[in-house]
Amino acid sequence: MNIDLSNKVIVYTGAAGLIGSAACRKMYDAGASLALIDTNGESLENLSYSLDRSSSPSRLQLLSDCDLLSEQDVDKAIQTIVDRFGHIDCLINCHYPRTTDWGAIFEDIDINSFRKNIDAHLNSYFLMCQRFSKHMMKQGYGNIINFSSIYGMTGPDFSVYEGSEMTMPAGYAAIKGGISNLTRYLSSYLGPHGIRVNAICPGGVRNGQAPTFVERYSNKVPMRRMAEVDDVVGPLLFLVSDLSSYVSGVNLPVDGGWLAI
Ligand SMILES: NC(=O)c1ccc[n+]([C@@H]2O[C@H](COP(=O)([O-])OP(=O)(O)OC[C@H]3O[C@@H](n4cnc5c(N)ncnc54)[C@H](O)[C@@H]3O)[C@@H](O)[C@H]2O)c1
Image (cartoon, rainbow, N blue to C red; front, side, top):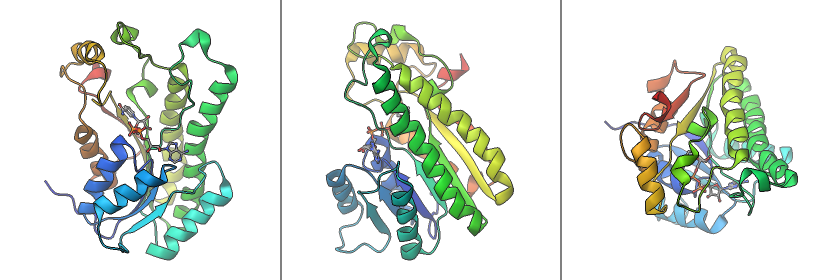
């Protein structure tokens, strides 16, 4: 089934990442106008070129220098997008900032590093929701989608990391749990203004992880496999489109059944 997103103006943070680049490709092909935000300017340029090879694409706006913790930068981005496209239908928060020591086990996490991760990730999701919803309230409509995770909804099963270098950082539980419940709060607060707010909660996406991990993780999932990127993009498109026009406040698991057991 093809979803028609023509006339939709969608703002996407973390656009150049694993999920972002695949999602932006599908949304662009479905006719959307996209404002793409990512700190990785080079990857963003490459994504833009792969989406549309014309020298000045009329449905793309790149915003690589927007600091998502700066009110001024975010407000300036909103103004740029509105000047360019006239309105904003949807904000998708998908960026994934993390410090260089992100993989540290619980006992070794430095409190300052924990603080930095909360600030860069949870607090920037808050600020983006706040500034964009202010604009959407004036419009009288809007749609916000936050990327959470299965680990925003439940604790990790550490046995899946045994035998690999990987772990699940404590900061991720605090951040994604915060994003999932902030989403419920905002759905309640912004609903009367015609704004719906949802979160998507993917399970692990296959992306070159160690075979031991892939096997252990897959054995735990009812569907017996990790997610492919497109498994996540489909439900995201549902939340973006008018097919979900009466869906708000949901934390949608996209996890092969992980949260059901
Ligand atoms: N990949 C998974 O298995 C998985 C599972 C569950 C949830 N998620 C969530 O999905 C989202 C996307 O994950 P991904 O795997 O595509 O991550 P990724 O690391 O591939 O991409 C994240 C992107 O965010 C950008 N970014 C980082 N900090 C930024 C900032 N401050 N401002 C703007 N851009 C910034 C990075 O440059 C990168 O392009 C994240 O929120 C992640 O927590 C991912």
